[in-house]
Amino acid sequence: MHKSKKIKNIGVVVIGRNEGERLKVCMRSLPLAQAHIVYVDSGSTDGSVEYVEALGIDVISLDMSMPFSAARARNDGYRYLLSAYQEIEFIQFVDGDCEVDERWIDTARSYLLAHSKIVAVCGRRRERYPQKTIYNQLCDIEWDTPVGTAQATGGDFMCRAEALEQVNGFSPQVIAGEEPELCFRWRKKGWLIERLDAEMTLHDAAMFSVGQWWKRCERAGHAYAQGFYMHGNSEERYYRKELVRIIAWCLLPFFALTLAIVISPWALGLFGLLPVKVMQIFFNGRGSLGGRSAFFYAISLVFGKFAEGFGVSTFFMKKIRGHRLHIIEYKK
Image (cartoon, rainbow, N blue to C red; front, side, top):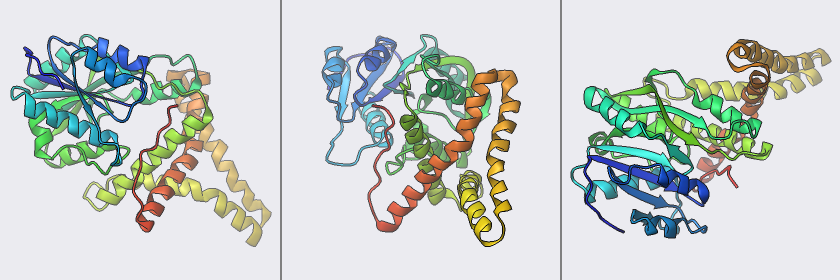
């Protein structure tokens, strides 16, 4: 690890695993002279650690004998920064496959300084290559959330260091959806989260196959299930609606087939609810997204429920059997 004097009260935590060229782009986008930066590596074999060390940036390599996760990596990163550099007031989290906009860190820091009730801010994350595959484009649509008060951030955001300490950081057992879970605990303490109308990061999803898309949806389902398992009985009923919606859509084919066998073949008409839902989403979104994008977005939302359902069932089966939870990776 390396220490050097910096002039700002900002710490940056970058996490990565075999990001290759994407990590190099990420590091080049950071304000090396204006922030304390640490890179937390999760078992890379592509020379990532050596590259970052050559830049003179602090590096933490996770102990891979223990299950690793983004939550664990981020915790190790921010705790190292706060112990090494007492002047840090704000922490910027960045995924290693993202390029940070040159204006973002100053914009986020200024906003937090001016708004004492805001605990964390995020901006517009965009896909670097949305035109390459429909799967990348679906990610770009997903990132485009409304500006203003938000329920949660994504993987890239800036927050108050004191607020991280207040809730003891990320929950290390959460292997997907760790940011919304953190924000849930912040909101319970009265903090607010804000999405700014500002460019933040360029993300490289690098999704080229339906298998990767399925894995990503599966991970989302796992996140809903684990979030509900942890906080479903809260006043907010965390992720209860999402979980009920997934289960309902996944059970539709079963009910249709059962009713067709027991009562009447006409019950197979229930399968018609799937294309009806696709068309409803398509017509609602074609004005803002365009015809082709709206169509694939609608298909993704509807049929992605089955992948999410698989993630839900996987989580609960592991809990029942007492198995350890491991991260679900969609990148190759």
